[in-house]
Length: 140
Image 1: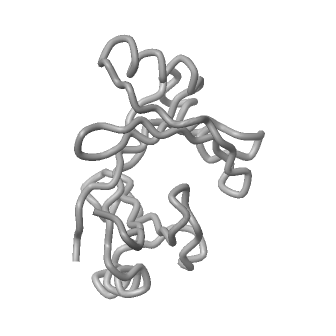
Image 2 (image 1 turned 90 degrees about the horizontal axis):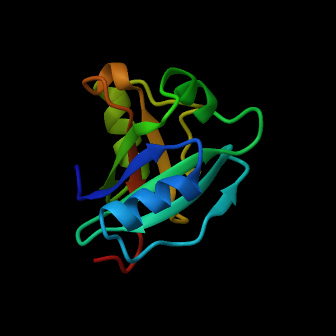
């Protein structure tokens, strides 16, 4: 069921400052534009790596779920890991059948790549927040 790692989500209080680290310290050259996802309460920017992406996420608005993460980790840090799956509904149902907690309503929502996503609670995933996303059509 598990597919390739699509991205690592990194929460940050400032996408601009985080971009500078990836660009100036690590030599990243393919960095997307910052864009808003108000329905998820985040600003997003993707940094391309040779085999994946880093998804920089910054709070958008007072109700952003990233605020609580940054309260515990003021400088930011790894927030989640995202794996691709061929069918998000089958993946969700499989997670539930195995006793895992799918966060939110349990219904997939559209993520930053424009495809359906779900999140699985860290308590069921070895302490790691896991995002599952349907593999984008025509990818790879």
